[in-house]
Each structure stands twice: as structure tokens, then as C-alpha cells.
Amino acid sequence: MSDRPTDFRLAIDLAILTIRDGRLAVLLIERGKPPFEGRAALPGGFVRDGEDLDGTAVRELSEETGLDGRALHLEQVRTYAAPGRDPRGAVASVAYLAIAPDLPVPVAGTDAARARWEPIDHERLGDGWLAFDHDTILRDALERARAKLEYAPLATAFCGETFTIGELRAVYEAVWQVDLDPRNFHRKVTGVSGFVVPTGERRNPPTGRPAALYRRGDATMLHPAMLRPGTARR
Amino acid sequence: MSDRPTDFRLAIDLAILTIRDGRLAVLLIERGKPPFEGRAALPGGFVRDGEDLDGTAVRELSEETGLDGRALHLEQVRTYAAPGRDPRGAVASVAYLAIAPDLPVPVAGTDAARARWEPIDHERLGDGWLAFDHDTILRDALERARAKLEYAPLATAFCGETFTIGELRAVYEAVWQVDLDPRNFHRKVTGVSGFVVPTGERRNPPTGRPAALYRRGDATMLHPAMLRPGTARR
DNA sequence: TGACTTGATGTCAACAAGACGATTACCCGC
DNA sequence: GCGGGTAATCGTCTTGTTGACATCAAGTCA
Image 1 (cartoon, protein in one colour):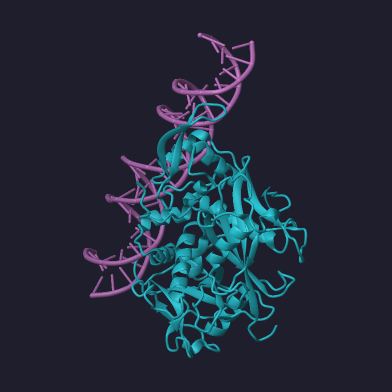
Image 2: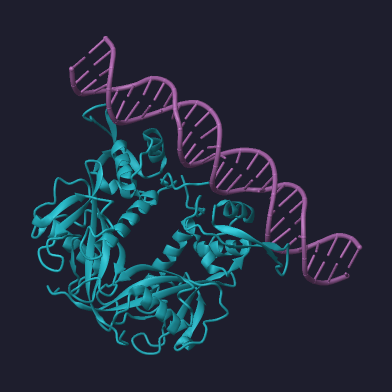
């Protein structure tokens, strides 16, 4: 190990999550050039002169996927800089978690042609599913999302402007990979102050009773929290 | 803004917390050279060739304070890279949170002469107390510590090998800046499985009844969690 | 010995959570 | 139009957790 500081290229990588067909999906791109050509990877790119990290994340989100980062939930997760993590040399990567509603498809954009939603394959994740150390990055981002569903109104970021309690429950079930009791969930969500507010409208589902529509409330923290079940207490 | 990627120098900064005289304190150094010469700052330094971030954090912890990072709780918090945050140019900084028991004093080391424990001044924090953007970094690290006390056995990292329930309570009170009911706290802590285990020993305080000594348990998460009070529920 | 201080255990009421019964309001096919 | 299927919504019961607070225990000190 040298005694001198190293110069790094600084990149950001995006773990963009959504729910599609009731399953948790991540936006992946197919790498068009080496290293890892043809492999699936998280979208991302280098920080430019005069840009801050959030700015880079918003720009890459738009360039690579056509999504508008200012409308999405976007938060920094952590930074990866292990020697050798990028074959091109000293590249540090700042991971971001983004949450998007179920959009029809990655909107066409500059490089968006290579982008696609992919259901998260928990089997292959951690086993070389993605290029670089993106398995690790995605796993950490997922854990952040799972944890934050408990105490922040993050789940509404997966939904459209208005949503039903059932849709919100589907978010929790997809992200946590558990089944939740619809009745208890309904009681809990509507009991948390400022989480959701009824719009007065209703929506007719393909089957079953019409559901009341809700809009995201102004709470930034959930009280009481929506605790994950199964997190066994002895 | 240029279209090209920038090269960054990559640094880590350490927010090292402890409890002294029942108050939360942070380890600061006095800067010996520009920029911000003579000002108080968080200890830190540049990532070297072949080093990973955790390694840099451990090395700087030892060099600047004489503390052994492998024995302390140490975790990455987040990364700061806003343009202009460092007058020397493009420097990205990865913030780390470290938790230390109340050690007599920053042990003498290479640069440790300039290091000192300083009670956290919540008034001046955020108002240019520290050099660079270290006010922000410290604030974010503090918030991480506060939040993590709820669901992780982090509080024991502030204590020595063995500790009393009262000492543990003092940690929560200092970090959260609240008063806790000793009786309810005792019940809660001893009710969380794997948080603390009794050693069978007792310790005689300067005054009052002797307290049972405990050791950190093997839990990595707390169930049920030690929720912050005052986080009002309606 | 009694005053004082801190630790440890207990009680009670309010509240939150899991399990699950029952009712409501749509669609569909006959 | 009617019954079956499905999902939303409301209610009940039991158990566990929380906050407020009384009480007792076991040391030090004057």
C-alpha cells in the first residue's frame, strides 16, 4: 500500500425499485461495452465537474431511463470503494435508492433503449447476477427500503397519485416478501396519523367491492410504526 | 458544468462519540494548517492506494486519536461531495460514525496531541462550529446514532466491558437528550432478548444501592425496540 | 440510628397487534 | 334477477407493550 492519497473517479449507481405484477422489480441496463459487456448492471455514471451527488443521480436517472428524478423518491445509501471493485481502476461509487410507481415501461431516452424492469431474483442475487459489485449494492439498497417502510411513508412512493389501501398493502407484501392480514393492515394504516388521507373517491377493481382512494399525507415519520412481522420476539 | 468526469480526492471523516460526565461528547482536532487553520474539525484523512474505506477509517482513528478502531463500533454514514465543500478542490468525504466508551483521554499518538473530547454544543452546531461542512456531517452522524439506539444494541458500545442498567440509561438520556423513567427503562432493557446478560457481579456506586452488572448480549437487533419517547403519537 | 440516594420489583390503565368472524358492494354467468 | 366469487371494511377478543407511579431494598454519610 502506498502512502500517498489516490485519485478516484467518482460514480453513482442507482437501485431503482418498483412493483410490477405484484412483484418487486429493479431497473437494469445491459452493458454495451467492457468491462462486463452484455451483462446486466444498475444504471449509473460518473459525477461531472461542478455537480453534486444528488444532481448526478437525477441526471443519470433521466439520461439512462427517461424517469424524472425530481418526482421520485431518491436517497443516498452508501459508498463503495474497495480496491479492485472496478477493473478500470480506482472508481468509488455512491449508491442511491430510487422508488418509482409502476410506470408502463422505461420511457425512451438517450440510452434508455437498453433499460428494462426486471423482477428481483432473490436466488441469483448475491451470486453474480449483476456486473461489478452491484449485487452487494442492490442488496444494501433493498435492505434500506425494507427498513424504511417501517417508519417512513416510503410505500406511497411506489404508488400513483392516489391509491387504495389494498395497493399499499401489495407494496409492503412485495418488498417484505410476506403476507399481511388485509383487515389488520387496513386498521393500522388508517390509524397512523398523516400517513394517508382519503380523497372521497372510490375505484372499481376488476373484481370485488370498490375501494376508497387515498392520497399521501404529510407525515414524514410513521407513528405508530408499521413493524415487520416475523421479526421474532422471544 | 463540464461534460467530463472529474477526478476526486477521497477522504474519510470520523464522528467519534462518547459520553463524558453524563454528556454526549465528540472527538475534535484543532487544524494545524490551512484551510481552516486553528479551527476545530472532525478527524479524518485521505484514502490511500489499495486501501478500502473501512481500512482508512481504522487507520485514521489510530493515527489521529490513538484509539483502536477494531475494538470500536464503526460504521459508514454517508458521502459528501458538493462542489466547493473543500477549498482545496474536488474532495469527496465519506463520513463514519464511531462509538467509544468513556476513555480517560485521547491516547497520545502521532497527531493525537491536537485531539480532545468536546461536549456537543447543540447551539453552535449547524452555525459554523466546525470547519468545512463538518457541522452537517456531525449532525447526520448524530441522527444515525440516535435512530440506531432504538433498534440496535449500539448503546452498549458507549459502555465498558460490563455496565449497570443505570449507566446504560445514562447513554440513552445523553444521546436522546431526554429523561427516562428508571423503572420502566429497567423493565424494558431486561425484557429485550439478547440485549444484556447479567454477570452475577455487582458494583458499588458512590451512593445508593449496589447495582447488578451486565454484559452485552448477542442480539444484533432489539425486539421489542427501545422506542424514543416524545415521538408523539396522537 | 435516621436521612439520603440509587437499584429493583410490582400494579394499573391505555394502547397496539395478531387472529379471525361478519358484513358490504361490486362483478360475472346463468 | 339471483347466487357465487372476490375484495373492502368493520368489529371482537386476547395478548403484549407502554407510561405513570407506589413500594421496597441496600448501600453511604452525618
